[in-house]
Image (cartoon, rainbow, N blue to C red; front, top):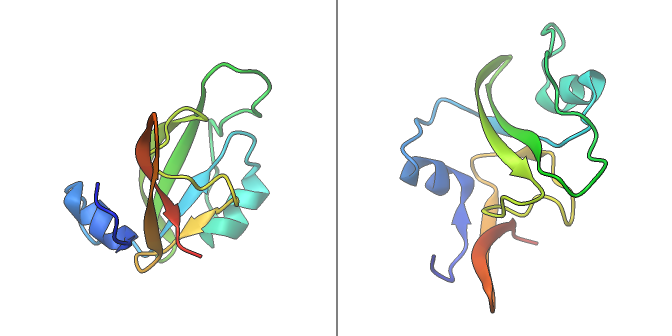
Length: 118
């Protein structure tokens, strides 16, 4: 991972994903259906199996929900709080757009990760 900022679109293209999304909703443990409806802009979906609230130090499922207009396209599972490719926790970011700029963070002894640019 380099040191220059890059867009979320750059990251998803490099991962082989098509540009058939206009936002990613970060579904943290404990996300309620009403919050997901608001973040995704989708009100007529029955969300099942939302990740439960994080209560201890064990890994919990979380998701990156790719959305195109009013349709959920794909959900990618990640493990909270251990997967650190992206830092959408501090500050908490729930919606990421293709043009969201991400800054590589390099910390000694820790794998590099991406954080939204400020």
